[in-house]
Length: 597
Ligand code: ADP
Ligand code: MG
Image 1 (cartoon, rainbow, N blue to C red):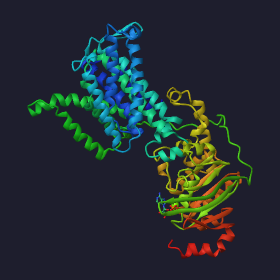
Image 2 (image 1 turned 90 degrees about the horizontal axis):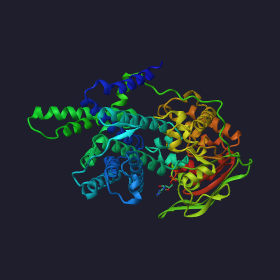
Image 3 (image 1 turned 120 degrees about the vertical axis):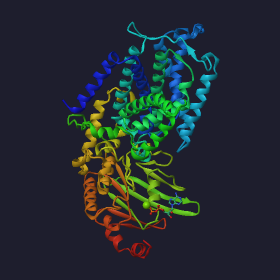
């Protein structure tokens, strides 16, 4: 048996027997660890993976706890809602619905905030909900609600800590499993692209604001479920555990345990809970007075972790135990993804007409026209500052011309976002390589196929997306072989040389099944051998019918490769023609040799 399976088996066996052998005090501690880990797990998804910091998760725990406490203790609910009283399970569903609604509203208001405004926003609603719990008289004010009943399951009433223990840990393990499944899927790759790859992800057709909303919602729902369990474990609720203090502590747990890792949530929750318990007993004795001294220790601990173990304790722990993710298998029998029909050779694919782009007084593109035909490589060249990148942005729909128009397959590009343009069949690479360095080459390339699948978050969480996933991975592997990177398929993308990373980006673009490739300075920074490999690849793609527009500064690189060249200087077209003609054109020679290149 594999060592990691064995470890997991031991872990499950321990979980199963612990309540029978431990004194109740420790079982209670384990219950808290399970509850906290569930909230921290939401933060792993939200903060560690998605890059969105929230201090407000405790408020969602409160929503879950208060909803069930209120509904299960109410004696005189009005008739229309009377069906919802006295059943913890119905209260759980209602709590989840309320939390989802609140999270959607708060998400719509705060997720657009950038930088430190988002965390500040989460603190703001964290405080508001906390005071709401404390001041609403129907929720018992600051004394709270007592007499919350125990949960029953299949006729079995979970009255004491040793019984609800199993429910808490079952919830946590299911949450860990579904989160793990989700991250290892098409939607999961989109979520993992949020941190550091949003522009790239949008260009691959990922709706990144939707992905942000999804993880925000999932984190809130997990916190709500933890709150529901908490209320039925404690059998009473008051506002104290749902304030921003706890919100900060949950974030502590995730960061210290390892915010980028599912197991990090459990490690962090265990460490903080045990340490807090121990410090609360020990520090007042040591210092001879009472107070929340553990907070100071946590602060120092946090500074240490941020200095010496940015990624938290889990990755360090992992070095000492033999745990590794199994290599993804490519299923050669998976059905091929449907392919687009390429336009016939020679047909115009991309037409830019009199494109002018002004930045204030500066005319970066002046009456630029160009055409790319199916099956050819067109180069747009010019010295630095000529306006090539600006033209690239007009063509790819990242920017809108001041006047003039760009037609792709006969349709105007103006007013469409990157996603729509990707869907139409235009796929691009970036002048400064944009990939997800800790993901494998295979996973990076698979992001390119995002628009060719449609299985959502729920299918992914419950592994109902495997047939589609196999098709996507097979396609990614096919493109990796097409560009010649098959030996590096399972390497981390960040460990590749620059030339290989550029080629990876081309494979990712190809994975979208485009009819036009846009490459922004693909040869920049490459060594001679790498340039040759790139040329060879682009020739091969042309032979297979791909149309390519290369924006390039390096004249030598394009001369022997492309079919036609458009030359720009000072925002204008100064020449257009075959490579041989361009090479002899006096205006071009002047621009390149005479310019301050
Ligand atoms: P190239 O890619 O050929 O080196 P660019 O398209 O990046 O040239 O730049 C052309 C000119 O437009 C430069 O003078 C540059 O400073 C200016 N420019 C580009 N983008 C902007 C912008 N967003 N705002 C103002 N000026 C810009
Ligand atoms: Mg440029």
